[in-house]
Image (cartoon, rainbow, N blue to C red):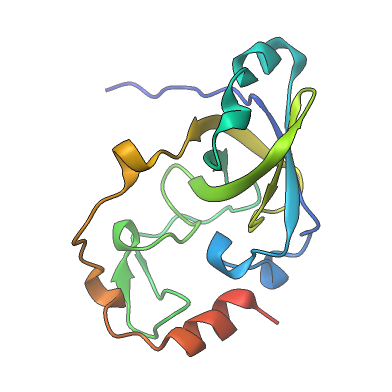
Length: 158
């Protein structure tokens, strides 16, 4: 299979400029707001998105240079396969965040839960919908039994 290319649809703006101080997941970044600024040629695609409470932002980890298949996740010191984590050093450097949509302002979406570095290239937006995305009875793999307070402290990075 040949490679493929993805073009950015916009850029994500957040208060985060330091990788080491950026919250690790949206659940640890609830009080941080961001903006997904959509390039004008894609702005028409934002129609009706304001009616959703949450959206998926798909983006490129543009400041990540390494690729690893085994990593030590922030919640553990044990080595895990990259595809059982959300670490940024993935083969294709694609990330996603489920964020709370605050509103639309022209060609920009304001959101909370910003765990993304400022200037990150946005490659897609999808609505979160309970009808399709909510799954009952899930399993959490190696994350089962982790201490929630420790996870919050580590994920918040403060």
